[in-house]
Length: 47
Image (tube, rainbow, N blue to C red; front, side, top):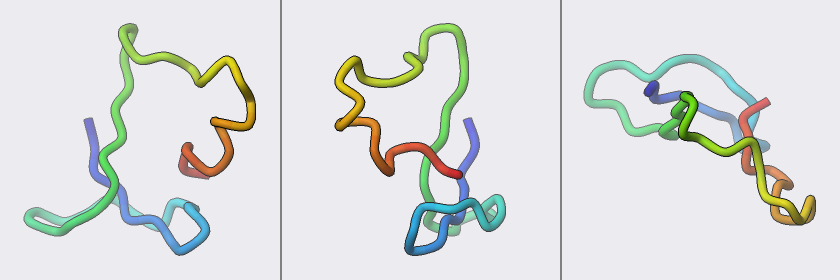
């Protein structure tokens, strides 16, 4: 798990510092690759 700082359009800027608020991003075999309906996947993944 990492905390990222993203811009207004959801693009990756950098990893957050300790105690800084950002977006939680997780990765692992238990995490799904996206919703079946592609409309639900818009703007949910950092780019």
